[in-house]
Image 1 (cartoon, protein in one colour):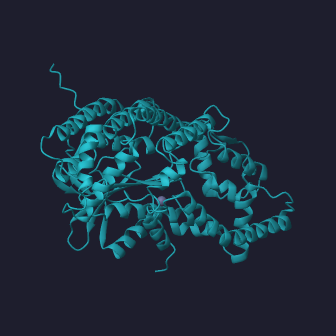
Image 2: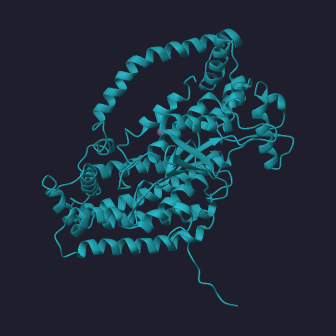
Image 3: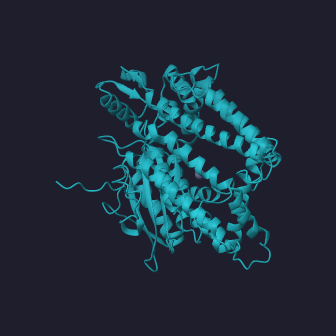
Length: 518
Ligand SMILES: [Zn+2]
């Protein structure tokens, strides 16, 4: 019997169409060896840049850095996507080591004095070089990236900053996984259906199926993922609303996955790191690289908003409180009464039932609407393709995105919409497997994901979204479009790689279309 050599799909170029990630053949045990090889490759790339005897130029230094370490970034990107959306004990077991190794490597590069010397040589001539706008941006961002990672610090400061960044990576990984485990561990078992009075059948069916899955057939199980908003908005049982509300507010707090210490330590280390970098606070350090620039600007903005919104919010709160008092004699209005009476009041005022809107927002129809919307507004076609591109979970849909006029492929879009308690982080997000940019000498399009936490269809109920969830679909799709429609040569600058206080603009623009007539 011949022994075939072990192959690691993360270490070879993808054989799939358009270089799509080979998500079906990547196994947990591939990550650490692939990362090790990726780091070695990246170090060799960097060594070649430093060893170049020619004077530093944009091409031989800045651009070469942009293209360095492709394998490593591929490994980390695949890991990042899977660990956020389809985590497991095995993945979590290597997550800390993997992320700390990545940070160590990044520190090695960003604090490399010889490398920085070359970067600075190019940066110092930036006004005399003939660079395109994008090239100039890459030069400035590269230089700033080094400075903000500690390149200008003395050796003692550098070594402390290294320690902090490594420790912080451990703590943040722990923090994330504690939240995930705390959410997965919680379940409220309900024996008697009468306790769920007021809750729509659709939601009860999901709780019944969750109970079946937990071996508690005939009962109801309420979990924290997808967030049990139906309890909060519909359940007449005030004690149950309180219990669920407290559970939602206390994820990874005072349970066996308590994150209090992690949060405190992260805050302390951030503050110390900001001090080393010459800033008064972590906020000042972060905002210096954003459009807002300073904490003062952010606080001014918040104060302006508060002035406008607070009176309206207070008026509304009072209205809901009065309504709760009038209908059920609630004298001590609590946070777990807000969604419930707010919903009831709205339904009464406008003679509508929020639940009766849901059948119009079957997830499949919403995705179809989103597709048509993109077609109309951006002249793109989105075609769902089954079986051609491997996925990390059977629930993930893949779309080919093409230019409607020319038929040219402009991207791949992965949609992963259903909650998976314990495996998927909470909320909704967009991510990429690849950003638009030059890879192996060719300009490659983006491979984008949208991840949400909606209720998976039950036996008799399709996934019917609330209005807020419809907005979430459009919001995340807005981020997706930002990456899909990007143009540019440098992946570190394209798509959502923008100032982080600008990044929510395209998503919020798309969100507004969700409520547009037509
Ligand atoms: Zn967003």
